[in-house]
Amino acid sequence: MSRTLESPKSQAKAKTSAAPRPKETSRDLVEQIVVAFILAFLIRGFAVEAFVIPTGSMAPTLKGQHKEVTCPQCGWLYAVNAASETSEDGHMPEFVGAATCTNCRFRVSNLEETPTFKGDRILVMKFLYNLPAWLGGVDPRRWDVVVFHYPEEPEVNFIKRLVGLPNEVVKIYFGDVLTRPQNSEEPFRIQRKPLAQQMAVQQLVWDDLLRPRSFKELPRWQRWVSDAQKGQIPGTWKEETLGSYRIQAGTEWSSLLYQNLIPTNDQWMAAVAGEPTPGEIRPSLISDFYGYNSGNGVSPRVTESWFQPHWVGDLTISGQFTAKVGSTGHLRIELVEGGIPHRCEIDLATGLATLSRDGKTLGLPVSTSIKADDSVHDFAFANVDDRLTLWIDGSLPFGEGVDYETAETHPAPTAEDLRPVKISVQDADATVSGLVLKRDLYYTQDPSKSDYSEIDLRWPGGDDRSSHAVNHALDVLSDPAIFPNLALIKGREYPIAPGRYMMMGDNSPMSKDGRAWTRHDSNGYYDAKRRTRVESWSKNEDREFWEVPQEYLIGKAFFVFWPHGVPLWPNFGVPLPPKFTPSRDLRFPFRPYFERMKWIY
Image 1: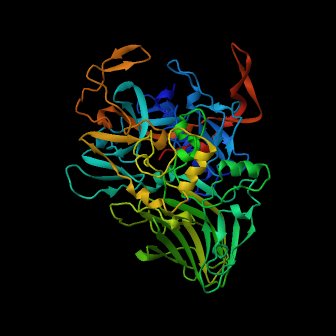
Image 2: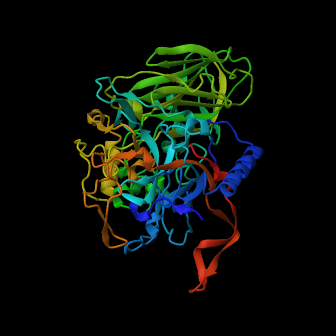
Image 3: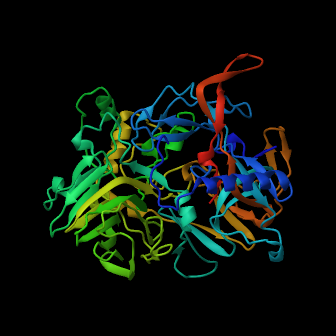
């Protein structure tokens, strides 16, 4: 029987987009499932144990109780947190009736009858951190997904990502994790996620093939535009079919630019009604919006996009590229962060790729498979954690990437960050298609409030959820005059003692983790379930509230073996006693959700 990791009150694709990761074959998937079930049933309870994820603190890596919504505008299939629908400790359940699409930001309602699925069933390798090395034991590693006892309530098991190691100081700054040794005056250095973890936590910003139908035919609302349309140099980028752009470039560079256009509530209403969209249309900064947190059954402080306003400059762009035979020019992919261009330039005659930052070359050129040969090549380029990474046809020409060093003070966004992605071609007949833009995870300094809460951004106060407040927030994210204030964020530091660790959830705005725990007094804590005071399990009174001692670690999560069943036609509710009425949540027939059975990174 699976164990529940956390109580719901303690925490809170119709199309699979292109992703820069090696492709898995059907055989790979079958082998993963077979291995997982062997581990689950043959050695379960001794070295492997099954757990259930009830909450959304680790989304998108792991999903708790949730609904799945197919956006009626763009067709994107996304999950929304529904942990609030479980009643506990006398609280009335809050049913999720609305959600906002991650891709196009259309708010869909009438979700009351949409099935609510239980959280992911996962397998955890127990004792991994407590065995000697000769028996296969390993030390806990940064970025592991770990199950552990909550230090103040030992009967409750939590699951988080390990971000802080013993004998160091962790600093959360501009959404990144930085560290330095204890009792040291060394500068803080960014901790880069391995590529597997980097890809596991990324969030969709925009899939160009999934355009909202109410805006699809409105040229002013297209997110990818030719630089010629912006009054710059002449360009000939033309969209020949949906999401496929062709250019016959001359000796000058011609660019395809991304602009992050988010409709306001009023503009959405007008577009759906077929009326002209009111107000100004202007790009905004890419922020840490989580569609998973957009349901109306969770805290109102995170339900609207304007309550998730943090600028994210770490981006990954992917797609397909083709150059006609005879083209002798270059392809350039550019990601802007803090006004600084980060580029990958590929010579189409030789296939040599060069990486650069702010005009300075990083490393040596490397050969790639992209050439002017009429072939369709998959590509992806990432600027994440102060590292540039290139994927070409599933391979990594520069390995995990080329690191670069930055100043200890993070730069503020500039007007250039309003169009943070450019794909440029020189002297080539080329086509770019299937563009997908993703962003990195942003760790907030506190899960209960914005990093900007102490900065004067002329931000609306309280829980005002009116159209005026939403529109005002989009104005702030679109106004370069306000951007310098974003650099006023100060980092928050967490010293970690020997033998202890710090944990945080991937769903940073909705994770009860080391940033928000509190210490119980020496008399223990009040257990609401038992209605009595319980002696605190932790005797380490010198422990900081964010620290987890190593002896509290249970194991490492490594496989999702059962996400939930996928309802199939005719998809009817199963009657349940004593009501004997069709259940909204239990559907029949259904199939296993093979697509989401996966290794946990």
